[in-house]
Length: 287
Ligand code: HEC
Ligand code: HEC
Image (cartoon, rainbow, N blue to C red; front, side, top):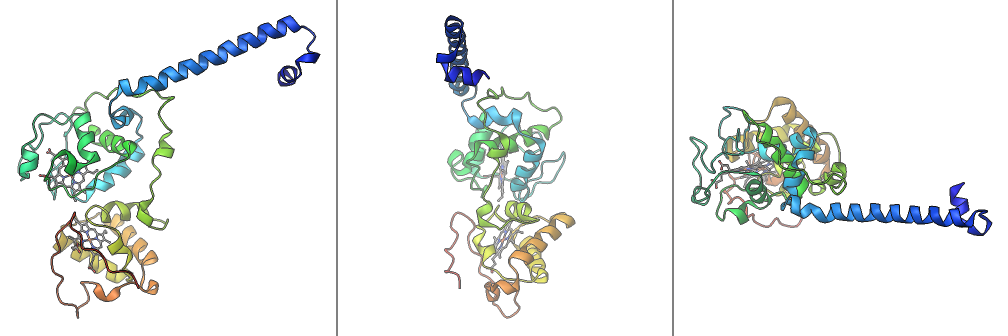
């Protein structure tokens, strides 16, 4: 075996050939090392915003999953209605704050130019940082791969998708699987977790969900209240069912949650409207 020969050069019968081979191996390894170094070093030059360089490598599955985060407030299909936020069909390349029939905040109306990959990524990373005073109550996607995934999704929701931004060197881009690991803000694993997280974390902290202990029937009622009074969109029936089943399983009555604070309880006075994010009132400590 070659390994054994290298490890024990004393026993190598042709010392000179051995040295030549070793030099060859060494220079090849060195070459590989420098080439990969050059690729890594070249990445920032390709895409200044890491998310933009990763758009081309986002998988359709990731993209769809990430858009769940937006679905509470946005449609993205052609001719879809404006909800809490404007319809996002054809948003890439479109003039900012120009969806017909949507009433934008002054903060958004002040923006100039079109949405391109870079500006979209900056906005999604930190909406309030990008457009101070925006009404988009969304904390932002800090992970570049998550932004890349959702931007890839939006790119396809258009009559003519914009050309893909230049991809970063594949050897330097971390594996997408590793990228998409999420902690789901402490929601336990199980069927329906992703949808529950995506929809319910869109407007408020999940802590107010986790402190409940409700039967499936009560969760169902609470979601009706969330839709009718709090602006949560109507969910497709199967998705809604999965969320209710997940909530009842993990935050059911046997978990001893704060059942009595539920606004659906008939004995409770109507809930005062608390301001939405960022001024969430602190939750009292759990039982
Ligand atoms: C809690 C509701 C909410 C969520 C969740 C949300 N948005 Fe928004 N979005 C809004 C609102 C409201 C506006 C309009 C903001 C304004 O006028 O200040 C907006 C505006 C936008 C705009 C600018 C549109 C234009 O016409 O210029 C884009 C792009 C956008 N959102 C993308 C997203 C994406 C992508 C996600 C998911 C990662 C997301 N939003 C999640 C509510 C939301
Ligand atoms: C479009 C925004 C929006 C979405 C999406 C949303 N909520 Fe809410 N939710 C609210 C608002 C607004 C309140 C009441 C104000 C507050 O307490 O901050 C609220 C309050 C609550 C409460 C507290 C009720 C109490 O006892 O005080 C629970 C529990 C809750 N939501 C669960 C959910 C669950 C579960 C989901 C996902 C299926 C969800 N919410 C999705 C806007 C939303």
